Length: 141
Length: 124
Picture (cartoon, rainbow over the protein chains, first blue to last red):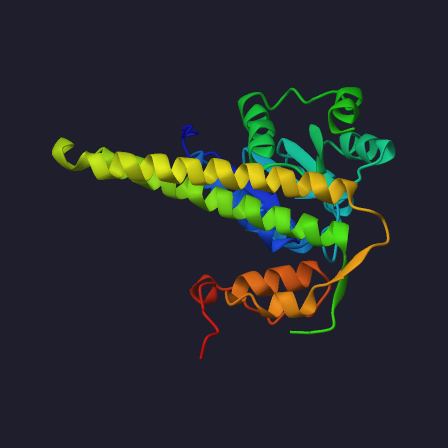
């Protein structure tokens, strides 16, 4: 089933090309406009010019990790876009750190394309609401 | 491609799961394109397209299920067991796929990442 999201822009940052292409296709089919980045500096550069409806960022990015990117973005005057932090084996302190840096939601890899699309949809529809950290840990356990 | 490359069984299954998931996403894309085409073709010609849509839908479900299965196997794979993946990677004739998998499994990339090169067949 194709959902129409009227071209909401979503920036996806991951160093894994398979994950990037997977999310790009799933987002395109769902009606989003996906912009991809493979490293931290590319995310910072992209967000200089683009105001996406959501940002999906992997913790283990090359050159600057996901946390460093969020720290750098928090020093900018613009508001951080609704952000989903993803990563392998996210520990409780990683989730706490991500949320303290302004992320709205966290998700542990591996995930299915459908699951991550659902989380992105929630962020875009209701950017002010994230999933509370305790619930995130329970979901991803 | 490094023919003597070893990788952990869990990582190998995980990389495979991602690739199967990606194949599933591609079939979902095809499904959506066929759906779009259905809107503009005459009703009398729609039979084959309906058949194609069902086939692609079945394919995407099959791939999604296989991805979940492989991912589950990856999560329960015994720690410390490894498999020789080098020669198997050499059997993949789709350059971009081989490159992505090799990179994810710790081998050197050949740098194939452009869409134009993604479908090359190393047959000649």
